[in-house]
Every structure is written in structure tokens, then in C-alpha cells.
Length: 627
Ligand code: AMP
Image (cartoon, rainbow, N blue to C red; front, side):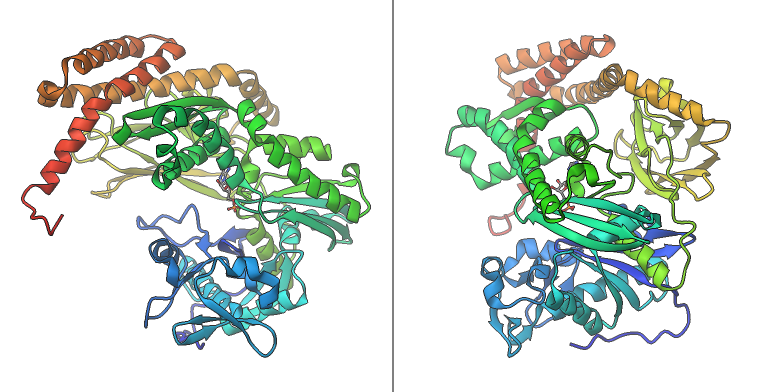
């Protein structure tokens, strides 16, 4: 399976890439300017991709070149019959080792003379190594796109600690087929520990707790003179964030089954709606102490919501968290250690963002885990650290600086949208989207703030600037990207850019100027002390904005359809509008919440009529064949 490559002799980047070749996603990083950096190609707007993960998916269109990555995943959803997901599960294994996993692939598999798997894809046959090579080559190309020049061909590639020799060899072979040299095959937990600089210890023991969407792995490592050794591993191949989603789905269905009936509650499309609502609620709960589990199904007139607190969620997912500790106990027993012997705990995987998971891990091991880096990126970052060391670099500069306080922007209503979170490694960048609040608004004032409090007035003000030249258009249509770039010297540059005209405005501030360590600590303590009250105030501010938008929509649309509403629904809506107007000027969180829910419920008939008329208009003039 040869790859055609451009022979570019100049503009090549030196160094050794770090590649996290994952089951679901892959990611690439490189040591640059004194620290490991995730390589992010630009998105459609020319901004570096926030989520640079590349799906480890290959799609085989009939008689065409295979497609890899994001596009393959998109095609795979429509056409699963020609798509391979999770090929990592087959690396270096024979048919008998993976009968369960084979059931979920669309291609027939045979074994070659060496006892290794080969998938039949049309007339072609491809081994897991060749399929992984396609993924690695795509990852390498992406690295080149992000760098703007040819990426290095040498790479450190990570594998799970439990991979045996033939699985590791298969990974090396995949690299070779992709035209890369795997200078080191590195254990994923070791990579995560390297990202946190734990190799600078003379000796110690580390537990790496890796909880993803569908799998859990724990590894116990020892460090001797900066060298890592895997003492034991354990885990569960069917345990992760998907289970947390399912627990919330069950909570919703317990009530929804009564509302809409058993049959309707079993429909796949409805279940998918509930599952997405559950994941949204779960992710929101990682940010705020309580969040709504909110299921809307306009066709059924269903608008169901229930507030879930972190404590509720903790109770719900407790059995799964306990199961991760069963695996931790097994791993510790195999290493002949107890939790108290562990000196460092490292978190990996998206589900370790759940605060209750972090709390319970802290309790179990009796110490705070390392969690300052993005748990999705830490393995690739560590691989890049290893690449740097192998390329002859020194590690003195490794200990990464982190920003001690969040940086954000004041939103409509006085709340704060945090753009770069506290403890983000520096340099850091992130982009948030904004829009206009009033019709024909041609300028927006931005207020940059620093701190953990939820309202702008309680944070430290860093500066203000204005973006003008927004073309007049209805409220909410303008698309303004506000980009925060915190460079290695701690200088923050904020740029706001309007999409359609490219109008742009920038400010540069120094967030740490005149801020002593004890002030930082004071600001943190204050935010803990006011957490509940802050949260309520921020919710009230956001609710008022939401009420404003909803009221405006009602006022705009009601006159045109008022005759189609039945009198009872109309009265109901008018009452809800009046209550919402009152709540919007008041200071009561509960009243605002109730008014918002009531208005949402009472406006469903209006929404149904509007949707109906939009659909009719869209269909008007088309004949039946076109519909
Ligand atoms: P991974 O396999 O490491 O990409 O982990 C993916 C899992 O992490 C999925 O179950 C996600 O729903 C979950 N996840 C991602 N972000 C968050 C978050 N902020 N809070 C809670 N779970 C999250």
C-alpha cells in the first residue's frame, strides 16, 4: 500500500513527533519553544482547531481512495458498511483473540499465514497494520498542515501499557508502512506522567487513572532515576462516560414513560434525543453545581426538565465509580502496594473532568491528582516530551507554567464567560463566539476580566475595547469570534472579528501585572466562599437575557399567527408573557426560572404553528417527486 508523497526538500521541521494513536481518536504534538504543543490545523475561519483530535476511522468508498479522519467518521455514520472504527482493537491479534470485536466490523476477516487478521474490503485485503498506517499517515499530514511545512517523519507512538510484543510490533509496522519511523513505542500512562514532568523525580510510584467514554484503564508505575516501569495494569473494557449518560437517561425515562407511553419511549429517535440531553447535562455539571436535564420533543408537545445537582449525579454514577476502584484495588494488589504508597495520581480521559470522579479519586488515593492539563491531550503531550528527549533536548524547562486565574469576557447581563480556564498551561489560546443583542447593532463593547467569580463586577477588570463596523442585521445573526491568546510571557491578546466583513479589533493586556501571589490566593478563596451565591446570580443574569430573547420572539411572531391559536392557548401565552415581563425586572431566581419554564411551555403551540408554516412555505411550489 504505497503512499504518494511530495518530495519537498526545503521547509521541513526538525524534531520528533508525539502521536497518541487512540482507539477512537488520535492526536499529534511536537516540542516547540520549550514545551510540548498539540498541533492544531486551522478551522474554516483560519483559527487553530480547539478540538484537534482526529477520529481513528477509515472509510472505503467503492473503487475510490479511502478516506480517513473526520470525513471518514461523517461518512461512516451514513454508510457503516464500508467503514472501520476502532481498528486498534485488532492490532497484532489473531481471529480467535477478538471474536467479539469482529462482530462489530462490516468486513469479513481471514487469518494470514502468520496468524494475523486480514479484512476483505472489495477485492482488496487490508491488515489492521495497513489500516492504522492510513490513520498515522493522515495524522502526519495534519501535523504538516498545522506546521505549515513538512512534518518530521520520526515519531514516538503511544500504546496501552497492556499491549504485548506482537501488538507493539504491529504498531511499529503501521508506522513503517505510513512512511514514518517509530523511534519509540511508549506506554500511554508513562506518556501522561511525562507530560506532568514526573520523570524529574528520582524515585516514586504513580497511578494513572484513565476513564474515557467506553473504557477504563489504571496503571501503576514506578520511577527509578527518571525511568518508568509498569508494575501492573487493570481496567474494564466496558466502563466509562457512556454509562454516566445512561444513568441520566434512565432517570429521565422513569418519568417520561408515564408521560408519553412505553412504546413511544422505546423509539430509537426519541432515545437518541434523551441520550444527547443526558450528555449535555453531564458536561454542564462539570462546569456548574447544578444543571437541567432537559428533553424537548416539539412533535409530542413535550418540554420536560428536571434540575440535577452534582450530589444527585454523584449518587447516580456512584456504582460505576466504585467499579473503577475495584480495578484500582486489583492493580495495587498485583503491584503489592496500597493506595497510601502512591505518590502521584495522573488523570487521563474525558470522563475525569467529572468533579465527583475527581473527588472520589482524591479520597481513594488520599491525595489530589494532577489535573491541570487537558485529559484528552496529556498522552500526546507526553509523547512529544519523550520525542524531545530522544532528539537530544534537555528537560530543564519542562515544568509548565499555568495561568493561576481564569480569563474571560463579560456577557450581556453582567455574567462572565470564562474563555481560558484557571490552570490552563501557558501558552494557551481559545475562542468564544458572540453575537449582537439588538437589531442593527453596529458595535459591541468587550470587557475582559480575570478571576473565578461568576459576575463581572466581582472579577478584576483587565481592559475594555470596542468592535465597530458590524453591518446592520437582525439581532443574533452576526457572528463574532473573540480569540484569547495568552503567550509564553503571560501577555494576553484579545481579538474580536466579525465574520462577514472581517472587521477586527484587538487589545493587549498583562493579566499578572501588579498581582501578587497572595492576591491570587485571596481571589480564589473568595470565589470558593461565594460559590453558591455567585452561581445563583450568574444564573439569574443569564435567565434575564434568555427571557428577553424569548419575549422578543413572542412579540415578533404572535401578531401574525394570533388568529390560528385557540383562545385558551392564547390566554395562557399572554399570561406567561406578563409573568415573564415581571420576572425580568425582578431579582428572584426561582421566579425567573418558573417564568422561563412557563413561557417555554406556553409558547409551544405558537412554535408548532410557526414550524408548520415554515414547512408549508418550504414545500410550496414543489411537486411530489421533489418532496
Ligand atoms: P475520551 O474517550 O477520553 O474522549 O472520553 C470521552 C468521554 O468523556 C465521553 O463520555 C464524554 O461525554 C466525556 N466528557 C467529555 N467532556 C466532558 C466533561 N466536560 N464533563 C464530563 N464528561 C465529559
